[in-house]
Length: 462
View 1: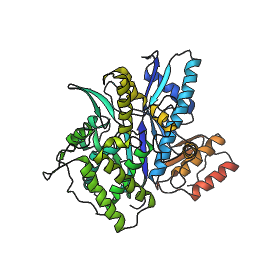
View 2: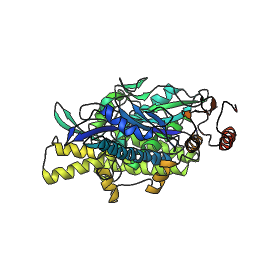
View 3: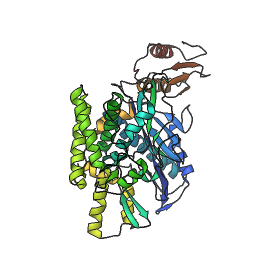
View 4: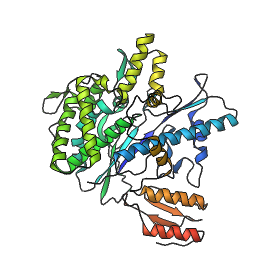
């Protein structure tokens, strides 16, 4: 597919503490968080004016799903817009908590694990052709996804029976299968849920659930961009299976436990390669692919950044303290330990691990670095602010976002999902849009003009 839809679903950790102690059950906290989102829609499942969706997921985790995007740059913008929107909800929730005489500090973290061992996800969605052999595509993609963590991992301090360890990936320890149909138990690298929110005869959704949530814009850009490029290469028959791993799940964990990125993993044909060596093979194929056919300038940039990162990882991973989350965070921890000499399991060190992922700019260690110009960026604050209120201009999200703005302005009752809109006092007026690339629709424009003139009654244009 030359054109592809991208999407990210990020679950967030949330806690209310008073003097450092949890002070209110998360089940009650989230209701304060969602209070300002109350509309005619479901209380805990709301589509936003930028075309995105925010809802409460399993385990009382607020989850933000980006609108449909057609490129990695927009995906970064709308992913960051989700952080900012949740930050606004957090401030509103704190005011409501104070009004109800509830003391405490509310925190939201963009990470994937808590200190009691629970994991919550960052799911990547890529639209693929229905006619493609899904399982063959997935099998070819798995070695890439397993080794991709060396530049996409968020880093994590963990306690093991051998002591304290620093892992590259937060999700690696929670993955049990290569391919499966569940996202909460027996998690896999690729999920088989066939829910494209599009024309099922033309499209299928590739649901990748092995990745970490990234604070670094650079990581999100590179992670999703290289994965989309790999998909295109596989779809066009440009990749082979000669990098298949003997045990992908075991390799996933072995790589995560080695911040040097030099530990060898076993391939199905008996060879042993480091994750950097595997990735360099993919990079070599990507350069050949880009020379074989025209490639979008964004993907040219991704290939160049991919090469820069892999060469740095091969030489000395800590060089990437401006770009890669797990390296940036490890550098913070190493610097603190060099000054104060605490143990790895010291509570102050664990708080550095956690505060790196705080979404509040005044508390987040990541955003402190960003303000000082110490991390690489892909977007800017003006573009993120725009993404908070306006949908992408080249996907179906534009129709959804513009309709929501109109319905709110006219005080019209409505209900919608990714592929349909319903409105009217009986929700009897319905429009279905199965094409995620469609940004203009004559019937919807006609409906909007009619709504501007006359309040909706029991009529239908379709």
